[in-house]
Image: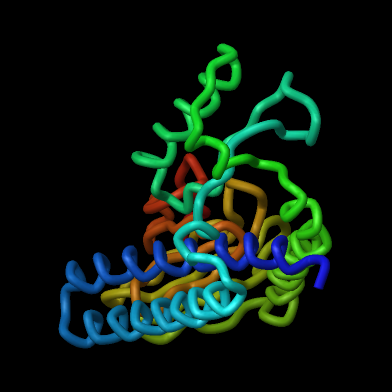
Length: 238
C-alpha cells in the first residue's frame, strides 16, 4: 500500500475542512433569524460533523492520530529547494496556525532549529505519494467550474424565482446572472466569483450566493460575506 501515508495526509486536510465547516454553520445557526432557519443550518452543521467523524475514524484506522494528520504544512514549495517557501492548509485557523507557520519559516530562513516544526514539513515521502490523489481533487474542481458555466445555458430566462429561492441564468450576452427573490424583492447579481471565476450557487438556507470551488460567499445583494474572494459582486441592475 505505497500511497497510504499520502492518502492519510489528504484525508487529514479534508477532515480539517469539515470540522471548520461545522464550526461556521453552528455559528450561523445561532445567529439565524427564525427557528426554521436555525433548524436548517443546525442540520447542515450536524451533517458536516458526521463527515468529519467518518474521515477521523478512517485516519485512526490507518494507525495515525487524527490530530497529527490534520496539521497545516510549512516549508519549501518545491522539494529540495529553500529559495521559495510556502505555508498553507490552515483551514481558516490562521490566527493560530499562521503564527506557528511564521515561527517555523523564520527558523528555517535564519538557520535556526525549531524541533516541533518538523511535523509541519510541506514535502515528505507521504506527500509525494499523495500527488495522484491531489491531482484528482483538482480535476474535480475543474469539473465543477465547467459544469457551473454550462448549466446556465439550459436556463435562458423566465419568471422570477419563488420567495426564498435563487437560480443562475444566462439571460443576456455576457456573464451568467444570479437572480433571487427574498422578502418580495427580486435581486440580480453577476453569478461569477471574483476569486477564480467559479459560477455561484444559491444557498436557500442562508439566502446567500456560494462558490462551490473555494467557498467564497456573498449575500443576496452581492456583498462579500466570506473569502477567499476579496471583493463583492458588481450589480447588474434589475
